[in-house]
Amino acid sequence: MRPSQIAAVLAGEFAAVPAGTHTPVMLWGPPGVGKSQIVAQIADRAGVPLIDVRLAQMEPTDLRGIPFRHGANVIWSVPAMLPDGARHGPRGVLFLDEITSAVPTVTAAAYQLILDRRLGEYRVPQGWAIFAAGNRHGDRGVTYQMAAPLANRFAHYEVEADLDDWIVWAHASGIDARLIAFLRFRPDLLFLFDPARYAAAFPTPRSWEYAHRALAKFERVPELLGEALNACVGAAAGLACRAYLEHLDAMPDVAAIAAGATKDMPRGLEVQYAVAAALVRHIGRLPAAAQPEATNHALEYARRFPQRELGVMLVTDLQRVLGRPLYGLEAFAAWAQEVSDLVSFERA
Image 1 (cartoon, helix red, strand yellow):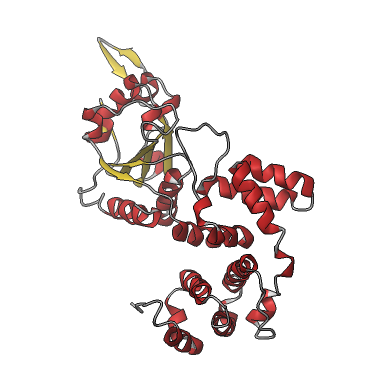
Image 2: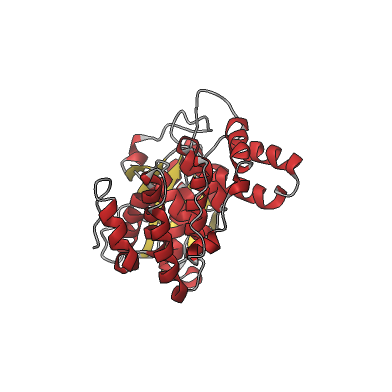
């Protein structure tokens, strides 16, 4: 499933907690696809705490607690990391990360926590959701086969990399527009993981965020930038990205395009991709009052692309950034009529 669909599932599961219909969710996927980030976003959007428990780093007693004598009995201390209504709040997300990398004795200790929401005398607060994540068997990680009793305690979803979802996230997160344009130009390089072939660095949604950081740090040091990109996303993707960046000198001023002061269209296809991504980023950062006029100019510009599909890509990304107000703009109707043979849209 796409990350946006997974996020909708998790949001629904979190909303179902007060009614008692929440089902613990297990997210499967290869490394770097964004499983942990999706869970963190759900907690952030709900304004509740997230307790991230890395089971791969634990012993059974870390989760179950340590026994100590109390009179004639032995009782178990409750680990401070587990949700506590008084300390953490009545609502939140308990995230059991790296669960498939935990040794079986640790996952066995989690059985009761996941299904019954308790460990001995300890009980998970009623308003807390339980999510888990791990790599698939064969993803070249340290993984154990999930035992059937544990697997039966979850609803299972597999997370897949999706370029459109990544672009929405990238614009919202301030990822360099040139990297967004590059991945529009080379969508095959968003995620390229081969579990049968070892590579220390390879392109994933997570490693492209690292490439963004490398570009910010080393752009002025060309001899380091290429190596830094290779270190983040692997040699093949790093070299392709560096070559793409070197062709962007002819890119027109996107601020002038948004202001309606120029209609220059660069010749190179790679530069046209870069202009489209940079224009979306520029408009998204404008004050709300200035966005309608700038978007009208962008819609006019979208009609000038020699390949109309690039104009569709530009407007689609604008819709993801601006939302429904795009449909009410003067230039939108003219653009939509012109591309009606290529695309359909809904205003709802």
